[in-house]
Length: 311
Image (cartoon, rainbow, N blue to C red; front, side, top):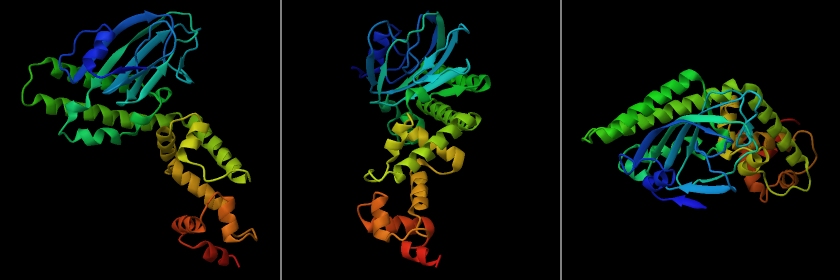
């Protein structure tokens, strides 16, 4: 695995000009033609075996890809469904694994790349706020698909950041750049929420699959313990953060809350003669106290009081 400690090191390997600032760099990727497309953060790998990279800095990539209509392309695990801009976000320490695909037609790529070292944000409010954006923990195949107007908005911000980075540094430069970065991320957050809603059919299918998955889990007598957010997301081939964000946008509940709601529904305290401890054990709880506490939190009643209400 290749680890890039500095932005300068990364740009050197990519045979790109040195950064105007050692801790932040933004540059436009001019249209280039490739035979295939990879699944990294907006960058094109050379031909060869699968590679893994990790950065010690944040990487934001806005990629536009044009290709022949008779070629079906994939980005990570997902097929392209239209040819607008695609934006991805990689946090420091996140591992990227990618390999060349089997596509054989020419693909034209262009876009923007913004690299920010955490040290640049030191002693600014954004130093703490950066990781509050859930999309840093999304997988590469959960990239943001941008409409033309959205792409134009983000490109305008990237151009402003580039202009500030190339200008003479003054006491105002850093604050202006940081505020522009925050604006960029806030727009990305808004556009991700739009994506959850506009791809409603596909995302409701995810919800249906999760409901079926949880039904099967709680009905299986051989399961031990409670399902976790990570295990549910893995079964649905999504990252935990992306799944929770998607569900929150669709239903108002995150993944953990959906698991709890399903668990309470499966308790069936009004339709079974099993004791509360037997029900708790069947649902995967090791201690009845944990089940009773969760049940009361969700229903405002203890399991026994809830059952008594049906008598």
